Image (cartoon, rainbow, N blue to C red; front, side, top):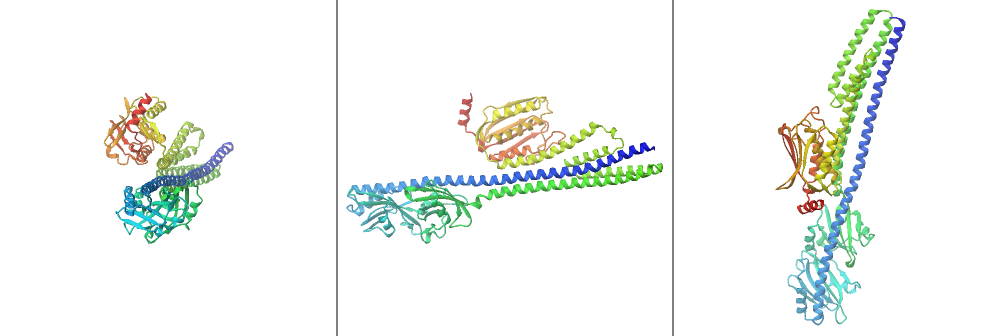
Length: 611
């Protein structure tokens, strides 16, 4: 070997050694940087989503409590108006008979009893003046006194038009409680007469139990803090009057406007922090509230957050594990390249003096290359798909770069292998995107809009025809298919089903896809039918689970997430999905959307307007 040839060989060897040393280092840094960026982005988004979900959960609970408090407000106002209206009518009838003082007690009691047609919650009606008290009790008992009872004495000193008293023993059932409410009237002689009713707390409890909230409470209090009613009632309720004026929630409610609002404070009767929706009945000096323990409200949020955290931790562990495996492979590759460089350096020092030693060194180099190739093949089989393919293609690319004559390497071959690497990286990204899409379908807030499924399906079919112009498919879409649902979820649902049908009819002559609905016992059943490849139903048990495919990627591309998304959407609308299929005969998916069904009258009206 001449000196010029020696320098050319040495130069190529040095350049190849630099490339072999620098390339693995760059790959290691790129792999680590990519994994870190993906994990940071994933966890950042998840953190934002968790806190947004918490705010949405609390806002939804406040909205529910506000609606219940408004219902209580309307109902209690009707109860009070009904009760006082009956008492006022009885007082007017008594006044027409000569007034409270002149009308015989029996006659006055009969006139009061005649108005006791209101609900069971009105336990008694009464009229009173400073010198006389007459009451008719629902059990036909009559109470007549020469002066108001002690629990009504405060009304005589009250200058306001409406009086609300403390709870007392029920006049019919001594184990129950009642509270008085009275209105000031004036008789024909100009004297003040109080007409009122005793309202049974237990009877009102039964009315409001239908409005009860899980892990919550409904209550009615006076403006001075006396608790008149609570569902569920605290155990100490029958031991005397309960006053909550010193509680944090009462102090917070004082600052609210007449329209009421929300207070977040501890409960006088239970542990933990509670959220209260409060409405005031200004004319009656009462306030109604619907409340729920904050921890119970956030329980579903905690469950969702725990599930999301488990998924994210699993993904993170998978990413970190795969990253360390790839780094380990690159480190082994670096070590092998270092050994190869040492062998080349030793060969370069001997080649000028001994040709025989050069041949021996070449044999040693070939042996080392064979060992390296064997190691690469073994490591490639150990890595999981699709990153196993990435590692295998990287090993093949390295072998091509290690050839003596770099000019002999075909660029198109290297390009093909790089494309395969990118394809598998894309597949990994699609798997991650599929997992995130699957999670979003379960928590995103649902919109409720009228959706024309027929028009939506035609739009999806048109997009598929433009995307696959060579694939001819005869599509039959039933008209006037309408639902009340989230248009985004409906597009995802029918997009996945029609995309599936399009894909699995790609090898079918005279391909046909149908979208229709039928009326069944359980409601309207939607169906998407094709005459494509089909499959064996004995393998369909896990069809709607993520990443479960009945065809290989070589037959039909995909990652196996579409049908899992479809099943989640159907379940969100309270429906069920089934599948019937036969190899080479096609497949039909049937599903219901009970929460999104449009009534027959609405559908007919929509069809008439559309025509």
